[in-house]
Every structure is written in structure tokens, then in C-alpha cells.
Length: 243
Length: 325
Ligand code: SF4
Ligand code: SF4
Image (cartoon, rainbow over all chains, first blue to last red; front, side, top):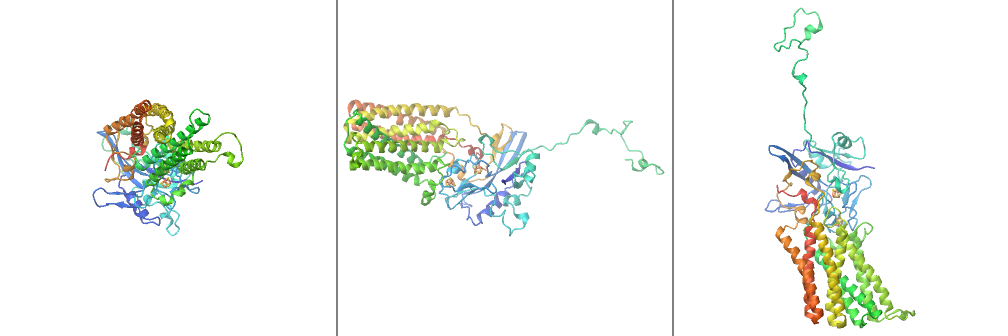
């Protein structure tokens, strides 16, 4: 079974919101209709988004760290939002595990949004239906696009490649490898939703310098200074290459 | 959560309607074993009409909650998994059952009409009514479970939610039955008022139990699990936008702590204290006005109670929306 998902590297994300804007741009122009905004350039703007980038501060000054945190639907393997939907408008696709809303069936009762612990669903105030990330289902299978572009818009837009896309059920996929090798984790594991999207943690880049790396082990006289000049008439390879 | 008045009216109104029907049926079955004086068919017919009216007004209120009411019929589809879908099926069933019950009373039919002799008066309505009682309880279950089944809304995820919906609906229905019988069947007033007091007091016990449970609830989710960083000192500096969104409107009531606290005491007084006192006086003095006042107080109190019920639930998604920026 396939389970498409995103893996987001919190160590790399710089919080530029490029994924947010490209997501909005792609999905508001798609066949499913616009994602409505109200007062976009006025006081009290509001609108529908599939993806948000948030920022958190961890720790206490001066030892603080800024974490930029993109959040969209996690396409849970056991999505609590799906069984509660009375109409069947919310469903999880068998073939690739994407959780979708059928806008033609949705009655806008908002019950599914109550049943998502992550706040990943937003009602469209004008179309009156529930909206959420589709993993760009209308582009990842589009054969008129070059193969390299058959990825979600956010993944293509990310300038730091903080977003990976692939099948988390395939152990050899780039996302599975990243999860395995870089300690990928899930959000709010306490609710058993088994999110398919994973996050890679912040990791400190450190080099460890050992004592013997600070002194030259090949300096038996323990005398630092200019190296003796290589003898011009040296005979051995060592004499010529010595540093 | 941010309470929606459509849902508040839906749940409180159908609660009264269901309770009234339960009261009618209780009265009828007591009458059959001659514990209570039997009543005219008119009493049951009008009682059923009023009960159905409450249910229908509740149903209409719920329509205002939907973005696409014209597609509401679709919501019967997923009854295998969704409590909301089950409610959508059971609610019209209850309306149908009470309508049939009232209609059979109106026609004055019993099983002898169909050639079956049981020797019991009103045997047919007794059987049909029993079916009505079952679906009525099923409806309380569905309504309660819509909220109780969302496990991360921890304030709701308890059997007390279903019990409270049942008892509070029952209490208001019996209180209304007391008012109704003051006009249509004065000999039943004390019976209904007495039961209204008993159910109200039982509801007091279970509602206070849920308040106590929720007062010391420990939320499983925290910013730590929300963003997966193992540090207790996390604060949000930006939620990703400067304006509002569905996420900032739907899940928080936006009222002060003081308001929340006052609403709690207001509903405790209006739903429980005032009606119990008024009903007791009404029994001793035989005053219809006191009965009416008891019902009005209880119903207004229930609106406050339901508002509080919704507002008190803490949605974990709020962890992600704390700082404008
Ligand atoms: S993140 Fe929320 S909306 Fe997406 S599948 Fe999981 S529960 Fe459903
Ligand atoms: S808002 Fe739409 S998708 Fe969500 S539960 Fe209601 S009908 Fe289903």
C-alpha cells in the first residue's frame, strides 16, 4: 500500500512562507475553485489556507532557539476526521492514502474540523465547504507536467529543500530514509492518529575536537614553528612532500 | 470551543421534546396499572403535538449550522461510523414515532381495532409508545455521543456527557409536562412536578460530577507534543498570519474567565436551584404560574448550560494559535 506524505525538516526550514504562498496560488487557481479571502488588503483580513508556517521560541534567553514550523493536513493513517463525517464527503483514498474532501458532498457541518486535533481543516466561508491540504492531488499525477514537477507546489517552492515528498510505506523512498536516518517524528502521537507527515527534528551541527588533534602528533620535539625546508637534493618521497 | 447558537437550540429543544414524550408515556403506563387516573385521548394527542413541535423547531435551528442545508439528506449516509449521521437518522424517526403515537391516540385505536383482544385499554399505544421510548433514548445517546466520541476534546470524552444530555433533557421535559398537565390533566400535575424534581436533582449530581471532573482535567497535549520539541519553555511567536482565520474563530469562545465562571453559577442556579424550589412550591400551592416560571427558568438555564458545555471544551488545535504574527 502506498501512503504519500511530506517530511518537513525543522532544521532546515527558514520560515520564509514560500510554501504557504505557492500552495495558495496553486490551489486557488485549480479546478476545485478559489480559496476565498475577505479583506485581504484591509483591516481584519481573513482567508482559507491549506498550509501555515508558524514560529516558536524554545528555551530562555540567551539560550533560545527559533523553530519555524510549517503545518498542513498530516494525512493521518488513522484519521479521526474521516469516520465522523456524516455524508462521506471526507474520505481517505485507498490507492495513495491521501485524505480528501468531496466538495460536492460536503454539507459544511464542520464536525470533521472538530475531530482533527491539529486544526488542519478550514471552512471556506464563501463556498461553505470544508477545505484542507490535498497533497496537490491535481498535480502529482498530471502527466502533462515534466516528471520532476509532479510534486506538491509547496515542495517545489521551498528554497531550502526543507520539504520532502514521497511514499512513507516504501522503506527505500527518500522520505522513509529521511525519517529513519534523521529521527523523523510525528505530531501529537498521544491521540493515535498516526500522521503520515513526519517532521525531522532540530539537530545541532557539532564537531568534536580531541586533544591530540590540537597538537601535532608527528612532532616528536614538541617544538612548534616553521617546518624545516625541504632539502633540494632530497632523495626520498618523504623529503619532497613533507609539510 | 466557540458555542454555536444553532446547536445550543437544537440540543436543548429536542431535549425538552424527548422528555415531554417520555413524560406522556410514563403517565400512560402508570394509568394502565391504575396508579394514576387515566386521561382523555386529547391529553396524549396535544402532548404529542407539542413534543413534535419542540423537535421540529430544534431541527430547524440545526439547519442554520450547515453551510449547505440543501444537501442535508446526504448526512444519513455514514451511519456506520458517524454519530452525527446516526442522529440525523434517529431524530426524524423519533418525530415519526411520536406522530404515530399521537395519531393512534387521536383515532382512538387499540389492538381490538385489528381483531386482537388483549383486554387492556390502550394496548396499541402502549406498544407503539414503547418503540418511541426506545428511539427517544437512542436519540439522547446519539446527541451525547457526537461530543463524547471525540477523544481529544477531553472535557467531553466521558460517559457523563451522554448521561447529562439524557437527564437534563428529561428534567426539562418533565417540567414542561407539569405545565402542560396543569391545563390538560390537573390530576397529573403533582406526579409530573414530583418526577421533574427527582430528575432535576439527579441531573444536578451528574452535572456537578462532570464539572468536578473537568476542573482537574489534565490535558494530554502540550506545545511539546504539538511541535515535537522536548522543552517545557516553548512559546509561540507567530501563528503564521496577522488577521483571523477559521482556526481562531471556531475553537475559542473569546470570553473572559470571569464570564465563564459567572455562566457556570448562573446555569447551576437557573437549571437546578430555582426550578426545584418553584416546583416544590407549585406542588404545595397548586399554582400554574409557578410551574411556568420553573420551566422558563430551567430552559433559559439550559441555554447557559449548553453554552458553557461548548465553551469549556479545550481543543488541542488552540495550542497552534496563540500569538498573532
Ligand atoms: S491532520 Fe487532521 S485533517 Fe489531516 S488527516 Fe489528520 S486528522 Fe484529518
Ligand atoms: S464539514 Fe463536510 S467534510 Fe466535514 S464532516 Fe461535515 S460534511 Fe463531512
